[in-house]
Image (cartoon, rainbow, N blue to C red):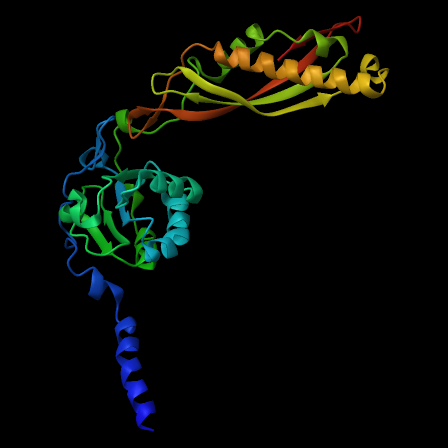
Length: 311
């Protein structure tokens, strides 16, 4: 009986500790609600600071890949950032990782939406931990459109509840600081005109009446130039014309592959030859954005059933 009583005495304090509200233990030293958030540079290249994000709500998330509680809460946080991250509500993930490769790998594998920031310093040595009084991670702040703290917590569920209460009617974003996708100069109409004038229908495909679609991904750089174009999908969409149907066995397969290769080569040539685009913008600053564009190869027939290629 004595052993049993000793065991219960040892367990009860442990259970009581974990029953307490986590914020009363770990968030009590964080900056108080109502405080103006300290200024912090988010992106020095594009001059993005907390002050430059005024007019929007901001969620600050302090974390690290080596933190078990951070990894535990990450799926729920990713769901929140997927739902709420926008031009009106900005998520900023401040990491206390010292290993850049591990940090970047984790971000890529977990598809974290929002802006990423790290000093590559230990938490106790990082300037942000001192500025924002971070002694425990994960930790979260929500800033209102004026830059004042309206929530501080170490509990992702409290963060989720607070986000449901945000009043988006208070969001005021100057047009010059709005986010936008990259755009071909002149818009979609001019892009279609460029493609129609530039694409040369591959002879091997037109000879056999083959049509196709080639999906190309490319990067629109911050200056509007095109880079890193690559084919991600390439398929024949029409192959029922008589010249192709007359082919048999290996000859049919060879012609099909030659047509696919020709479609891919022509699509890449045209994409790489495009003039500069209007670059994408994030919070008003030019950024590089990956873009995906389908190139359709279709044959056009005249009254004598003679075809010519177009896109």
